[in-house]
Length: 345
Ligand code: SF4
Image (cartoon, rainbow, N blue to C red; front, side, top):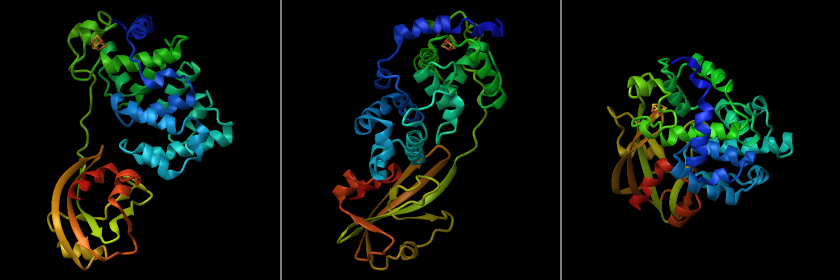
């Protein structure tokens, strides 16, 4: 089997896609705004979880003009549960730029799309092909996996050269139905050519795939070992005061930038400060600790090992704002990593 294996790809994938594609809310429209929102969400979460978020988001902000003009707090609330809040902020910045520079119409040119905030090569490929039928591949981990298996390619999946070569190879076979082809590759990765258990017996590429022919499904793609995640130990304080529960905002940069959080202190697990010292550092001198509970939150590159303390106090340091429990649950965009602490209340 030669690398020309790519030439018949659209011929086999498109008919399979038309017969088997899932009915997903973002497939109801090829509007660039809708495609873009769905693609950014799908980078954050699985399809099933993205569905409800997408519907809610599009009902609240149906056009790029609505997103460009929305309140930050509304946006954060709509984004809640998706993580990576910097992406939500970039979403709004991008919408504002599309409104100001392009009169609210996303450009169809991939290079222009890539100049917009938060739009990388993958998203630009997806938006330009799905919304504008431009013959631009959108290569993500799924597409890399499928193609490594079909071709029998042993290059590491994160290699820049491999990605570049694959882009050219895929682009050379892109059919006129570019958007459907982009989605057919995504669909094959989501439904058939699964990472652990590829369903070769019902795959449209059966009989045309090196991995299937040579039994290399569990060998390919070649995935380099990931660096170990950094572990951070945090004490989190749920401070219950007569005026309500105290929160503060996270810094504008870094993990969960700009989100609301319970006051917390990073602790050296080998040499932890006493609770009195930790609370004193936050400006809490008079207090009673009522309960404590532990929890681990895993980010892509980071693990937070947290212990939360429910603390009753009458101190109100000016760095914090107070909220009722109802406000916390309904109106405040509390970072998901801290939501479990509500169980203490
Ligand atoms: S035949 Fe198997 S390994 Fe090859 S693309 Fe299909 S599911 Fe993946």
